[in-house]
Image (cartoon, rainbow, N blue to C red):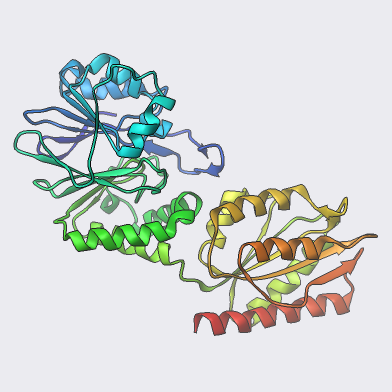
Length: 400
């Protein structure tokens, strides 16, 4: 793609990865993604972030429409993750910059990514300002959003904040701004990104938002490293949504995910779902065979309750459930109600194992743990329905 001028002398230089479907090797990206890089033309010519390895020629081509790459004076590395710094070594080789700005944690980590001996690294101090002519670069550490090295770069004269992964969305699009697409769609993809990438660091997000609110930055453009750019009133929209996500306020919603061999556990899950729905709770039923674990997490993220099911398999649970539970546990969702059901043939460990998973995630367990031998009969399914009704009552109490 050709460069896009965001403001006079400030350009987007990113790469659209139309075909990305597996983001970072663990989350789906059904709409592809972008790797956003930015260029500021001033007395000093500045490149902010690069792109993923394999796309360096596209970045160089875009940059060449604006300046000779060898004339770049400064490179800002807001984040060292390979989708943003994968071709940093190539750009350093070609641009030969005067300075490369990294955070304190970035300065410690950069040599584990690159043979950077002799690079003109400048370790920023939080809040440090660097004049580039008519404009100023001001740097803020944002550790654990979502790596230790993350930082934001603010340009006060342009009221622009470059935020690396924060506020990102996995959307491959020829449009560059949130206001050019459906805001509801953008919010959905921003929430999916938060759910699968940022959730473990939600407390850090809240503290960071509080800190930045105290700085009273004049802000009319937010430029993340993935997806669309926020401008005008959409900046407030981005900040509000991130605060909402970070608080993990549950909705009147239950997610039921399960695995099954001969449909017995599936029948039990559907009976629980029926009980929930009868009480006005929105339900989402997801087989782990049919749904990727990141899609399950995207639904779990704003649900008040999680109901899980698996038959007993080799004195344990089915591997698809173990995969999904491992993934969700690592993301540390907060404030959920949990319950478990399952079927078995001769040893019935499944529901105790499932309940232990929920307990280790800090969920409030709703009893009883229901298990059925071989096939659930009418009484067992009736019990599952009642469990759904009981969970619905707990949800209503929880969300008021």
